[in-house]
Image 1 (spheres, rainbow, N blue to C red):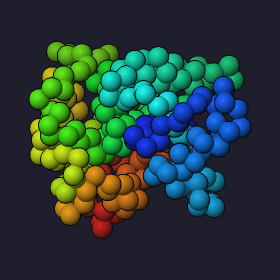
Image 2: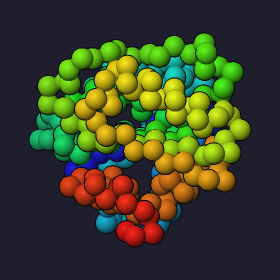
Image 3: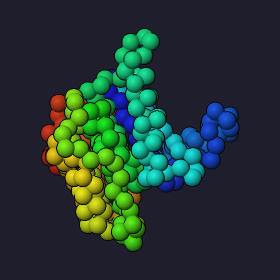
Image 4: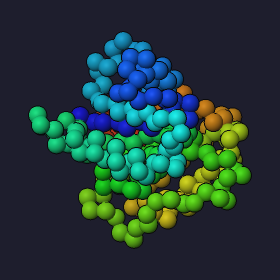
Length: 239
């Protein structure tokens, strides 16, 4: 079945690992997770019965960062988790042709890491509100490895980014310029189309517009209709 990795933002970090903190830590993790947009689907009674997809929602500890630690987390957690799902003892659980990586705000930077590092693994990447404060852009290194040729078995069909034109954390133009430069340096845009949405009048929090009001994205990611990726380029009102 299709699998969705969703990388959370700054406000969803937890203070204690569930394995260490027990029930109290589990309660904290769930409360933080419910604040993330994808968790809203859990409140729809029939949603889980019809989607047939798997959500993996890794939560970072306070002090960790999808920006600074993203590459290490991708290599040491996300990829091994996928390997386990591909090669489970009872047979393959995840469909290797339908793996999406999605991130919001700080988590968007983690999704960018994943798309650059492993375009041969992820089929679709979404970076929502990857806005770096304008004052920090000049000192932010363009991380990741550069490539001249695509990885063997290149699977990344589409990279999607979204911005709000009233984002107070940073200019959407500066954020987009930085994103394009970063993806160009890693050769992502050489082999993968880049689709950008700018929501007029929206700020950093434009989760609802991006994920809840774009049926095409929902059909591809959650229902696993990856053959309809081209529909993502249409308008939500037509779908």
